Length: 106
Image 1 (cartoon, rainbow, N blue to C red):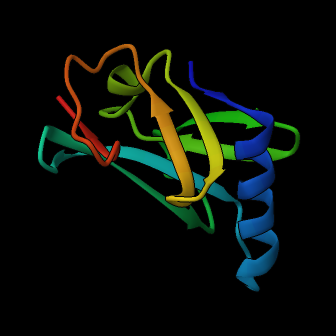
Image 2 (cartoon, one colour; image 1 turned 30 degrees about the vertical axis):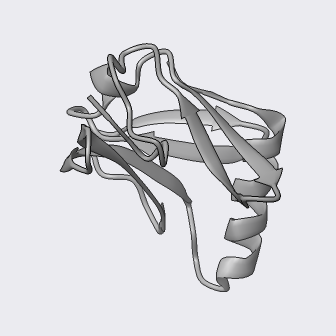
């Protein structure tokens, strides 16, 4: 299961509100690539795919495809605001290594 912090939920809700189109929720997936082997991808979608796992928190829907589910199991997603920049962070117990940008893992 994936956990979104309150800060992450707020950021997702704000992105959905600003999208200006019919948005059902946020898709989170893992693709091959990045400097450490896998990279996180996130984007707003108008509907889930039929095989997606659906996770809801505070009326925010998160969709995860079947291939990404085991790679993301136990991950905590946060949204941080810092001097270096703002963005989502991933605390993934399945990652054996990661790059310095925090957007890819192996």
